[in-house]
Amino acid sequence: MNIRQFRYGSDNFSYLVYGNHSALVIDGGAVESILDFVQQNHLNLSWTTHTHNHPDHTSGTRSLMERSGAVLLDDVFNHPNINLDGEIMQVYPAPGHTDDSVVFHFDRYLISGDTLFNGTIGNCFSGNLDAYYRSIRFLMEFPPDTIVYAGHDYVEYAMSFARLLESDHTDINRYLQSYEPNHVCSLLGDELKVNPYLRFNDLRFIEILKKKGLPVSTEIERWNSVMSLG
Image 1 (cartoon, helix red, strand yellow):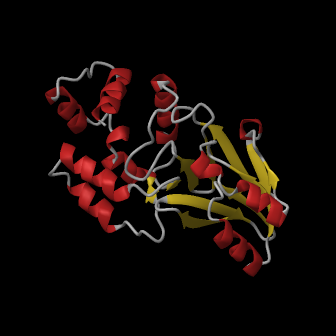
Image 2: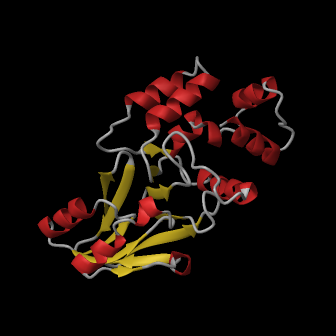
């Protein structure tokens, strides 16, 4: 399977996952660019779906369905895997940002929506910090060479915030050097080094939390402390 990223709006991303013949759209706001690519590459747009049901991620769905005949997988929780030309893409629940958030995984690719951004994470609009912790903890266990494709481009803002916490953190400079606005992604291993919201077990970061007078005795305390920073 292959993946193609399309930017729409100021910072949103759509993703087209495709095999030799069939394709699936995730968060299909970039309608025209997606349909042009599908036509140029002689693909059949079979399905459209979402990482979660916020309007900025569902805005293109009706148009894609009407213009391509794609079928909506709207209750993606009931589709733990999707077969695309004989290859399997896994779907995992990832509640936290919203109750209905999911992530998609195949090969080395993780399409993480607003659960995990490149350099930061989404707001906990569900109000369930414990669920969000479990989702993030689950994603942190993927191999470090996993390629993270997120729902928005917040890289520069995220690294500015990371620098406020650790002005001398040299990995931030390396991370920014690999940032390409026309193709935004990162390795999970790099996220574990620079993304403040994934570093609640990092000894250096724990010292930062301590200096701010935040609880650090247990992992869940450290998670809650990190979430209180932003």
